[in-house]
Image (cartoon, rainbow, N blue to C red; front, side, top):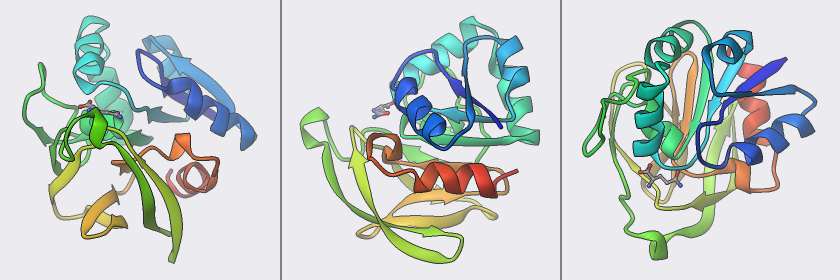
Length: 188
Ligand code: GLN
C-alpha cells in the first residue's frame, strides 16, 4: 500500500520509518499530485499553526478535506489538531474531519513534556503502549460517532471515527509498530 505522509514540517520521517518497517511504500506529500497517489495519509507531529499556514499557501485545504472524506487519515499531536473541528488560537480553521474540540499545549510548555504509559484499544484488545507527550493537546469534547480508543489516566488520548484516527501522543517516536499497523489494517 502507498501511505502518504504530509511532509510540510514536523517529524514526518519518523512516521516514514515505521511505515517502511511495516513493508509499505512511503510517499512524502508536499503537493496535490503526491496526495492523489496515496491510499492513506498520516499527518505527523510538529507545529499545527505552521501546518495550517502551509496548507493554505500550497492550496491543499480542499484536497485534504476531500481526501479525508473518502480515505483514511491518521494524525498525531499537531496532526490531531489539524484534523479537529474546534481549536482556539490557530491562524486558519482546522480541517474539521473529526468532531473533537481540542485545547493546544494543554499540559503546559516544552518542559512539561513527558513519557508515560497509555492504554489503547486495538481491535478489542486493550494494551499498554508508551505514550510520548510533547507539548501535547487535550481532547476536551467529542461528538457523536467519535470513539474513545486510548487513555492516559483520566484523559482520552486516542479517538477515531469511521476513517480518521488521532492520538495526542507520538506513537512514531516509540519503537513499536502496533498503532501504525492498526491504522493501516483497520481503516479503509
Ligand atoms: N504544540 C504543538 C501544536 O500546537 C503540537 C506539538 C506536537 O506535535 N508535538 O501544534
